[in-house]
Image (cartoon, rainbow, N blue to C red; front, side, top):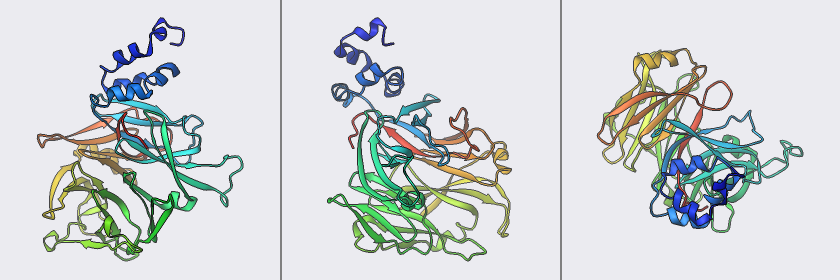
Length: 369
């Protein structure tokens, strides 16, 4: 396009043309050439769109730890248009980029600040980077050791609420640009923690080495001092709710009063019980009452039966599933009228065994790191 007459139009004219497009079409146009990327990333164009462009709700994929691309991109699926989008991350001056989560239109990545040819496991340092892939703006948070990037779960609510959770300790940056360390005080490694408003929910295995027994714990962020005070979330009426699901995982719902729990529905209480389908339960955090939100259709679940494990990710009104050797993703969506739908998502990019991991990315042009 660099030699096209279209490229000779004044920037203001291009802004007026593209500002009438939906955000998903603007994101696609930025991938056409460097000239359009620069024009549609300018501060004046972002200001023009600030009041008239709604966020774009996408399902982003995490790249495999085994595959580091020399041309890093964020691949995301747009359920509304049923197409995959690609956001270049080449504007980041780091190596070994690994997107992990997002919040308020910003993307969080683990990145290496060293030249990978000179890096060794002993001197490897990882930095948590926050950026907006649509504008190319970024900010680097204080460095942490590589162990935290491998074993920690990153939760982000805003620039003032960023936490790295592990079994033994949790970290949060302070106003002095340092990480504050808190003792986690949990019985085991936190599984699928979610940040909801001003508190964290997580699952922990409180069983024995021979049999898992899952429980839910909660802590308020405002109460953190040197130790995070976790409280077990339970209700007598729940009965065996955690016993009917195999490998349960939490997924953030569309509002602060709900959370999903997803897992394989066991056919019995036997230790090695087979699963009959994948179940999605919804917990009301005010009344602490569970309800079934959805269960995977039998014909779709047959594709997951032969896989040893599956991965769950999503948020809002969508939950996505992947498994080895399937070659596509299963997507559950809930609509505003209360109805829900299951469908396949084809064409997931990347290489590997098909076991995709991901997160929700609310793409916005006005988000500033």
